[in-house]
Length: 321
Image (cartoon, rainbow, N blue to C red; front, top):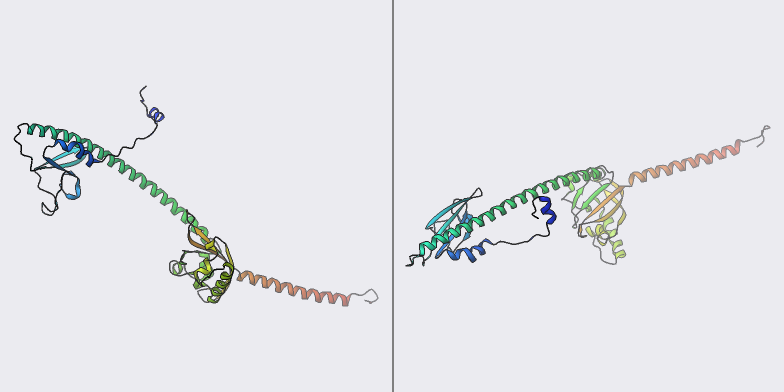
């Protein structure tokens, strides 16, 4: 039963057949054998230029025709197919002259067959060109849509990061800062453009603490940990979460106490591509805790005084304690 509709054809579909078509092998293997002492060059467009040549029938030394790198053709034929113009440059070989009276007939027949073959090749090339153009347009649309979604996602991610009161800083594997959120700007006093791709986290830490932490990690990991980026990546690079209290140095020189958590940033192939540092300001918490303890101490003193006063002033009706 013939497959008349697209639905019928799709239902009957089983598999594709991939058959690569090499124009040069086709021409050399079958068609050019009938040209009898003739070779040809095949061009895209109506101009015979080296950069437009799609096929060369013979070896041509560069520079034979001025600066074009092409020979002087005995004849040029133009073909108009599928809305495109193509040119054929014909060349005689040394064996072109022949006493055989039938040679012109054979050449004419060969040229006719060759023209039909070229028309088929051009048709295939045209379809391939159209398919390639459609594929490029499709991939361009898909890329534009993916880029739009990525932009929206990055905008949302940045909004989330900037809306946090935590200092969130990311670095590459060499320690260079790659992102610096609004919370980090607020806590440390640096602008984002002063830090990103310019400095490492070492600038916001005390050198003495970096050296001391390196010694701790050297004992813990039982491998040498050099002061610097290794101090901050030593645990995270081994798949461990690094949590530690640090003294931060603000841009204006003031210091603050922060609780820092460092983790590795992994790629889709589970390779480490950087590190993420999230810090919370403990200075305000410490001040609040100190104020709370001071208030409790004051209340305790007042309670003791009040208890003493009550003991000294409580009497019965006759004034006896």
